[in-house]
Length: 218
Image (tube, rainbow, N blue to C red):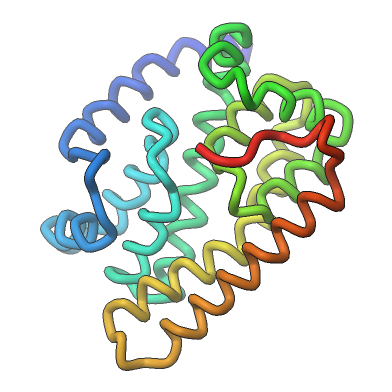
């Protein structure tokens, strides 16, 4: 019954998301452009930002660009909180889009990433956590792939929150640093991101065989 209700309201949710995203030309947006857009909403900026992050899986727009803009607009702590809320919402939307709609349709759209689903199917929470820790694997692709498996939503979303914490913190700090480039935190964040990427690359090679590894990149 619960899944039937979700399926009933999913088209409405997607329509609202497309309307929200339709107010922006996402393809050519930079963190600075998103900052200007959000500031135009005044006190509603946090709500609009969370909505953007929630519905961005419909476009596969890079989440990192949004996270950096959060640091520019809101600062480190509020920006990280809003980004995690948005990521959880967006991850939930993508997860249930796959779970409630045709798995075959999603797999055709993301054919080169279909191996993720089989890996998540067998290793569940741990594999989602590891994938979320690797910023080289697109956030939304993981969400869609997880929805095509039998992983429990609770395990999926907990692994998502824990896995994105390091990357979100670094990206939001980077954005906050761009607002005041004379501060050392920008350079600290850049160094931290480089270290995270290096560790992610090594971790990917170590944890996944070339035969079973998901494809990296958009």
